[in-house]
Image (tube, rainbow, N blue to C red; front, side, top):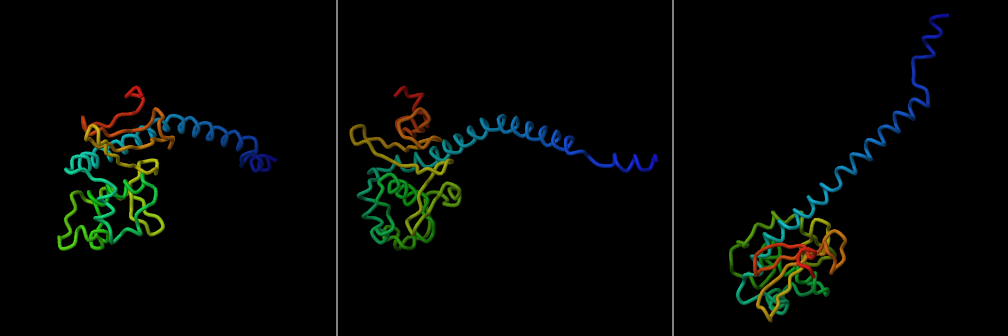
Length: 191
């Protein structure tokens, strides 16, 4: 009889198993809630670093880069330049600062020069996106395009990220301002 009773208690009951699974789910939820703010800050920090690396290079060029000059310099690649001006300006930033070897070899702008980009394209690999045969362009940590604009009135360049929400003109937008070589959140600008 004793042997028979020991056999019945050898496993877990369904209720015990459900309680253990429930505890694991609660612990994972608590962990996820604790980790999410850290991940958000990590994405923002990565985007700020990207903008601090690329911003001074693109914004300090004299004369300032423009989409018109880019389309001229990349004439051999014109069919690969995006019709969307924000993505085209992102392609322009990568073209002038960290072009990969295939872009360098195909562009008349670099013809006759040894492959020697200003910055190493490999350092931007996780921030580079290429789709549909178009030239690669820069994206932020949330996989949204990062773009460049030159303000002729103040003669300074800016690099922009829409931030996590992917909406422009919201508090989480990140802006590289070449006047002070800093990346600032829109909410900190007060605009």
